[in-house]
Amino acid sequence: MTDQRSPSGTVDVAFVGRANIDLTAQVPRRATPGRTTFAASLTASPGGKSLNQTIAAARRGGRCCLIANVGADSWGHQIATALADAGVDTRHLTLLPEATTGAAIIEVTPDGESYITLALSPAMELTAEDIRHALDAIDAQAFVVQLDLPPEPVTALLRRRPAPTIIGNLVPHPDLDKALLRHLDVLVVNQHEAAAILHTTNDDPLTAAAELRQLGPRIVVVTAGAHGAAYADSRSSGRVPAPTVPVIDTTGAGDAFLGSLALDLARRVPLPDAVTTAVHVGSAAVQHAGAQSARH
Picture 1 (cartoon, one colour):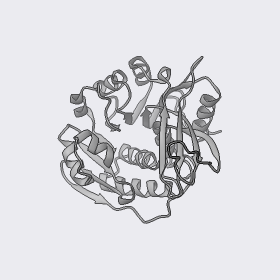
Picture 2 (picture 1 turned 180 degrees about the vertical axis):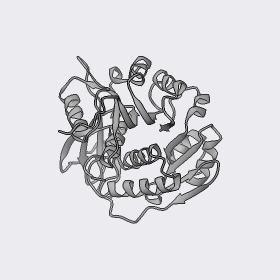
Picture 3 (picture 1 turned 45 degrees about the horizontal axis):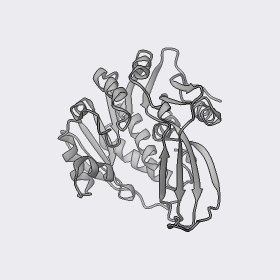
Picture 4 (picture 1 turned 90 degrees about the vertical axis):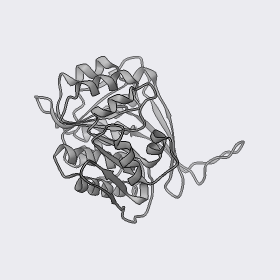
């Protein structure tokens, strides 16, 4: 088990969000009403968007920490072990007694598409106090926060702006004050999330990136799966195509993309180069089964 913790709490990227167990079944097809589909196998592995992103960045050599809560149960200990094995600083992963770690039920079809149902454990959600406590102990070049968390912890982080680069991911919680998005240096969403935020059916990622900048973020990156990604800032915009690769499992590919992007932006890599590398990291991830099986 490796340990990349710095005595001073200095990291490249701190990730704020959720960790859970992925219960993944390989199915020949999704079940229809009243019918049963037999899965070839079932695996239980650490997952969750923030955990996936943290490990992706750590595997590229980043010093990373995860701020999240899990239960002090067998799944929670499995998550803590996986993070430590990846070299992640786990001082801000809190194992809560008498609480159940959340789980994602994932069906993967032969074309590699994943269908995910997340069973949240309300007791696991971060609080504003959790954020304030962690921020007092972390010196990071970048923070990545899940915007769909309850608004209190997100608000506490965005108002404090604890690092030179603040990155937001996902559709914001409906109760989050949208004016807070101006505190984001970078917003990263996929094209479906972009359409939901903009209340549009337009699925062009470059157009969406430009329109999302009007909400306040300095930089917007919109991912588009097999079509790569688009980006826009005050000086430039562009598209980065994805290579054509065999697809085994799309689970966690977007998280691998974001983990790579966050690390490069924390290291001051120019945006077009950071997006290009992230597209290739995401493309590598879909060639393996499971969000944590690929080595980037």
